Image (cartoon, rainbow, N blue to C red; front, side):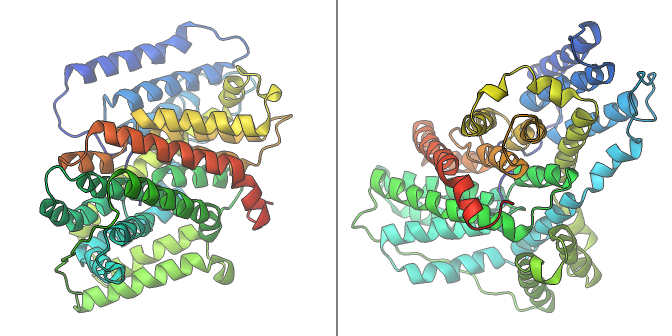
Amino acid sequence: MTRTAGRSNPVTGSTMTRGRWIGLAVAAAAFTVPCVVEFPGLSVEGHRVFSIFLAAVVLWITEAVPLHATATIIIFLEILLVSDKAILATPEGFTPPSYRTFFATLAAPVLMLFLGGFFLAHGAAKFNLDRNLARVFLRPFGTSSRMILLGLIGITAVFSMFMSNTATTATMMAVVLPIIAQLPPGDRMRTGLALSIPIAANVGGMGTPIGTPPNAIAIGALSQAGINLGFLQWMLMAVPFVLIILAVVWLLLGRFYGFAGKTITLSIDSTFNTTRQAKIFYVVFAGTILLWLTEGIHGMTSSVVGFVPVVVLLSTRVFSSKDLQSIQWHVLWLVAGGIALGVGVGKTGLDGWLLGLIQWGEMSPVAILAMLSVVALVLSTVISNSATANLIVPLAMTLSVSEGITISPIVAAVFVAIGSSLAMALPISTPPNAVAMSTGAVRTKDMVVIGALVGAFGLTVFLLFGQWFWSAVGVLP
């Protein structure tokens, strides 16, 4: 499950460094700008949310406070400034949303979907299901280095669709590192193997709604607009393109890093856990995925299905309170903050004002989508992909329903999510990249070249064929 990432994992360490203090100061200054400067055409309540928006941008970029803490700040300030419980007077003609609307984002349905994914990912690690599946799935690929590379890429991508990409990378690196250790120091295949894992994890996470936080943010924004994008629908939209991108990744790494004509011997020591708890988890894992894929048959939404493993694993005591504490709650709060920001931006008209600064009507739909996704890609390369999606998805959704714009809201939201997830050119772009760098087998130059090529190719394929394919398979109305 991709990225707690794009650096979407929380800031580590409790010490306030000089850079963090500067980030806080800049965020405070950004917050005050709309308070003292009147922007023509923007309402009073719009100015208030604009202050929150600018402060959030600075905090997410500088990570002066943890990303999930920024999310709570957003919710708190929106309640204080623009809700029906605001401490400031309500502007004339503005009907403030209930404070419950902002608190409710902490339990939005899409968060339950993600929570179920976290339970499955944690259980897979707890019962060594990930390593055991890797051992089983890699066996058919033999000893050919190119086929082993293909197997590693494919298995990593599949794992990342249902697990954190960081956890997936850590698991698969444990498989790859013994191979790397056997290769001569100057063998470029060492770099290719180390690069294959984070890239496959990043790309694979695009394939399911629970694969990466930007996917959840996009689905949450669509849900707020009354559009339900199901689990299987998302997979139909993303997986074919994921397979194409992964094939190109395999060809690039095989060509650049000397895999031709070489052999590799794999040794993965692991056996399936056969305890009662493990067997229950295996059934729950398989059953949950099956329910997600058959949503159209049984009628339960993907968010409701996501709550199934939570209920069953806790009720059967397969998960203890300690397991519950290990869940990545900070990611859920980060997504909630993005949803809350979108609500505030939409309720106050700030989205329309921001979008009005650019003459979108003079651009073609393809050009608009290209701009949105490229901005998401570039921004997500240097800051959290979750933060990027939180900032851009609400604007993209508003733009899609603007007068004179003929873009489906689904397309707009998905393109921003995809653009955010394709950013993998720097060690700071995503935790899996940092894990790969820590092996010592990857140079920054290699990561920049391969990451940029994969990102550019992936975005181009989506732009050229995305809407056509989605309409052909009936995903778009």
